[in-house]
Length: 596
Image 1 (cartoon, helix red, strand yellow):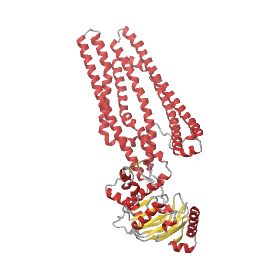
Image 2 (cartoon, rainbow, N blue to C red; image 1 turned 45 degrees about the vertical axis):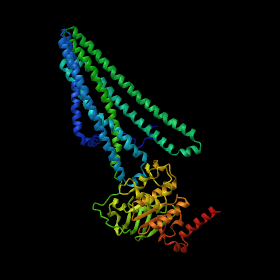
Image 3 (cartoon, rainbow, N blue to C red; image 1 turned 90 degrees about the horizontal axis):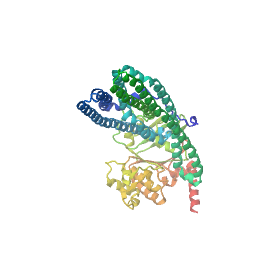
Image 4 (cartoon, rainbow, N blue to C red; image 1 turned 135 degrees about the vertical axis):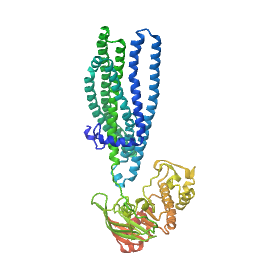
């Protein structure tokens, strides 16, 4: 069943990958002085921890057995002082390790977000948004323990084990060897636990991914579920997926429930061996009672870092899986490349020319075929055609959201591939059919938090497009809160805000992609009047379903199956009685039917 839902995104790589770890350590490089300091603190904490049983041994053999109360008081104070010093160092160690972890996670999240913003739209066409969010949140958080405790604190576990073994062998070699007889069993159990825990971790991740995917899909499509009364059926399906996830978690818990008590059992066996063998040596007067006490303490301390190292393995395993996915994203180079020496646009007149342009989203499945046309500065050109004719693709290629396969696109006679993308887009504003608003307020959705666009400018452009009428009626006007995706606004209101946003940047080239399709008749009338004023001195490309909105365009280009079939103004195209004439007649009849 697991294999059925196995996806490339959830496959686990190695439990430890040296190349991945090297790249992860690169994020710690800016904080290496803190890491070195934390490792030094770890050494001190390990030494102080290992000294405790030795002090106990001295207290028993040199002072308690000899009734030396002054010496006992002194050694007690030394022991107390070492514990206080250990606690103090532990505080700074915890602070620095968490500081390292949080700073590193901040850097990784920032790098992921910045990289995502550089990727071409082609990448987002085939990548679920939820997956990208998971990379910047869940996967980065999975690295948190590795950076804040795993990498640094593993030194403590190693140092304390080495310190304990050193003190044990220093005090009595034979008793140390007897104590370590349980070590082969412990090593075998640890390796077995690691293998089972790894398999279990993979299954949990896979079923969790399935659960998240099902939840996201059905919450998004809740209106469909409810309108067709499928709640009960969907609930049963969710219960089955949820049950699979529960069972894999219980299986995972079982391995932990066996391993950790198993370590405790081996610890108890080791203590029993110490009491049996060491106690016999005490009776024979070949070992002091203080050494016996110290060994019991050391044994209990010895198995604690063993358990911790097993936990560090799980942290490492999670981090490797997450880092593999993060670096796969960061290594993705689906980008629209800038030229090495871009030409600087000093002044743009707005001349646009397509020369024998071929373009395909996938391989050679061309959606634009040998497209050639020219738009003079200040002209308004409309592009019409059936759905899938290639209208939006012309916009996508001109703005360099996608690069063309063959041909040239020129702006003022310059190939746009020789212009910096940001420089090119500084002269273009676009209004799309599907408006996207950010959470914030009305004002920030118009000026996009650009300090160069004043509040007065925001109000001015809102007034030009007629958005000021509904904005002024809101309780907080331009400071009115906008929920995620503009949920509290109507489709028409969002469209008006998008139009004001485009105009706020005073573009030389204005692109309207079905921009008035969702606006009521009254709002459309206001925008049409505003457009007449705004298009003076600007080049405009208008894509429209409503042919009534483009009748005054200087030129109309008719696309059909990726090819230009007709060109002319409204009257010229009607006279040809071709594709445009048929489209116009179809809409005219539809309007007559609606009117009747």
